[in-house]
Length: 158
Image (cartoon, rainbow, N blue to C red):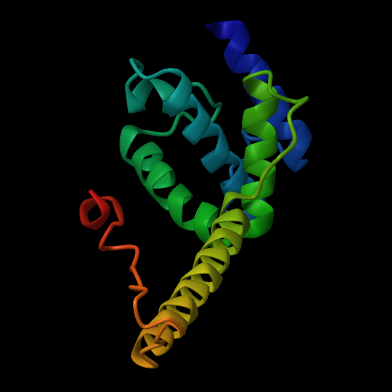
């Protein structure tokens, strides 16, 4: 456990360029600590927040760690650079460095637009079908019956 914590500290410090143990409220350092606490909480589920706070030289208490983890979600959602750094750190820590990074938010937006376009196509096709049915197309030979897909041909033939 101790070597994994050192490894995580090393990765976070390398990727963010700051020392986690610095006693400062500068944004870069606070963001680096948030990333560190979030991965610690994910990886060490059985560790208490107090134990996680004690792994840094600052010896932060459980309330500070909990606050940082809660604030992490806001930064991850709204700050693209923060999200990319965190994803890179987490992938390296879990050994997923070879896999390409996918921006899930952009992929979600792309898929929503694609769904919207498909819904418009379906609506247009439904309107075209309604218009064709309303034109009441009659067969050339009056003895021929026009069958619609909903009727089924087999019932009337047999």
